[in-house]
Every structure is written in C-alpha cells, then in structure tokens.
Length: 161
Image 1 (cartoon, rainbow, N blue to C red):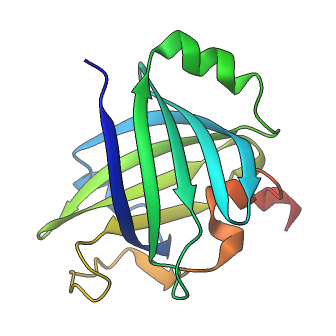
Image 2 (image 1 turned 90 degrees about the horizontal axis):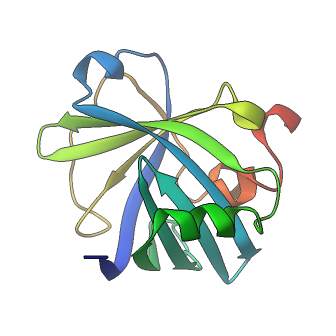
C-alpha cells in the first residue's frame, strides 16, 4: 500500500568533517531526485530511493530554517521515473547513510555528480529546541543557509560555487 505523510518537518543541517559516520551507519541507499518546481514559497520534488518512488511538496521554511510544511506520498516507481524526466536539471544524486546517534538518526547525504564533494548531515527533531547528541564527525551548522537546500543545489550545484 502506498503511504502518504503530512507533517511539519523540523530538522537541523550540518556539514560533515570526515567519514567516521560510515562505521556507525545502520544502512545506506542511493537517492535520485529532481524538482518539478523550486519556487521560493514551495518545492515539488520527485524522488527515487532504492526501489520506491515519492512525490513531495515542501513549504517555505520558518525564519530559523528549521521548520516547514511537508506532504509526501509514495508513488509507483515507474511514475517517479517518468516524472524525473520532466524535472529541472541537473538531477540530484546522492548516497544517504542512516546513522543512529543516541536517541536520533542522522541522515548523512554524500552527493555525487554535479554536487560531488559535498556531504551534509540532517537530524529530524520533534520541536525546534529539542536537544540531541552531537557526534564528533559533525561540522559547521548550515541550517537555514539556502545554498545547502537540495532544491538550490539543483539550480546551482556545489561544483559551481
């Protein structure tokens, strides 16, 4: 059965200093994603993660960059593959590592292709000021810095900075 999720996404983003997270990772998957629209007020994203397809709409972030509306629906893989052909170029390609740290799971994205060299970790929280354990491989916080949003990386890839 295809799943649908409506929620407030609350997360913090960080650069990653080294690859020590790999030894702690519980899993990893390739993600390919593109944007049908990357308007400042909303983004519409198509994603293939493993053998699953997703359509996601995200609203504009709050002032701190931690919180925004997110609607996501699983769609058949063949539909996601077809929709990716309509997306703005370049398409985002990355490997996501799930890294448990204390009571949270950090998602570490290792970008490839036009964004090769960029590694970003995100942690989802229940509220904006929820405490979390900071692993030693975590670098500078980049929450709210628009250039690190995947929708912006599809417009101005890391290799063009």
